[in-house]
Image (cartoon, rainbow, N blue to C red; front, side, top):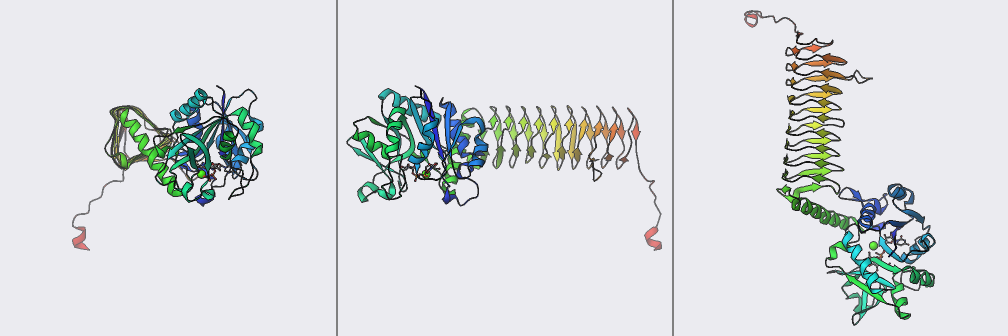
Length: 451
Ligand code: UD1
Ligand code: CA
């Protein structure tokens, strides 16, 4: 069955009290509308139309080519929003899946099941409903026996209807023929003076057309985010879902409640993640790593068998078998080969560090190419910036940089060169040479006594 999704995302989201359009607020590091787009993709719904209004330009930029975009200039209700999408529906389409841009928790399986039910029953409309402990704010599902008779909005409900706990999730499949035939018959005779899409249920019944319902097992899945309390609830649910997914894939999370793993992060099996770890963006972590407490990785690629403690890694690559931290900071453009050691209070920026090299403590290495088997002593600094430009430092294989060395870039330390502690190196050091820059030590005997 050919299906087109219509994503309703024109509303202002007043209750968010935000300059940012509601559907761009992020859950687990991903805008809500992106969750909906990804869900539809995974459910196999390729063709999508997004109805935008408030902040439409901004939302449109995030959506890009992922959906066809139509605008609803005035927000006159969900029925009116779908009217704006109607001309964009392909003539040969069968099913119109209407979904809201503020429901990031819906699972692809649910959408696929809803479409399958709609097709199997040949309904004019099939609703996704759920049982809410507290149904306040939602449209109520009014049933006559088993049959769904109508949806009554909160503001239009009488006391008896208000007690109904089965709610409209705002997700439906419409037979396109039915939708296009009756959409224009909607009116605004209701408490909110809006065109209610939900009135189509009553209309279908009046014409003796089949109305079906698909009841969600888990109300949480249908949570619509209207304010920041619900935003935090959605975040908590999706965070737990992601943590469970990685645990079931073989990752140990010592304390999942204290672990933040972004929606698109991947972690290999037998890695162990300690509490207070934040993994963000497109981070990919291999197998058998120890990610100690207080680590934060953003858009980084980490290999296998690493031990990383209390470290921030941003847009960088770590090989295999490295030991990093505590308190290291790998800034964008850092690439570590295998078996590298980066110790405490070491900052590395836009640098490559070769296999087996060590920067064990208190160093800054920026704009550098460090070979393999290099030892960089405590307190070494690459002086890469003269206030205007940045310059490169090259340290070749096997070099030994004594503690507290300043390498004034541009400068090259050739293979196996040796630099004495405390040196400020301002020109290239040849292969296997010793370079030492040090004022002569003066010792004046009994100097204090004579003072
Ligand atoms: C709607 C449903 C209600 C359901 C609830 C689920 C109607 C009349 N009511 O109510 O039965 O329980 O969703 O969350 O449909 N939108 C537009 N243009 C508009 C109005 C809304 O694009 O003119 C979009 C909003 O941006 C939002 C979605 O439609 O993404 C739902 O709108 P909202 O105002 O939140 O509807 P509810 O009152 O929650
Ligand atoms: Ca809503």
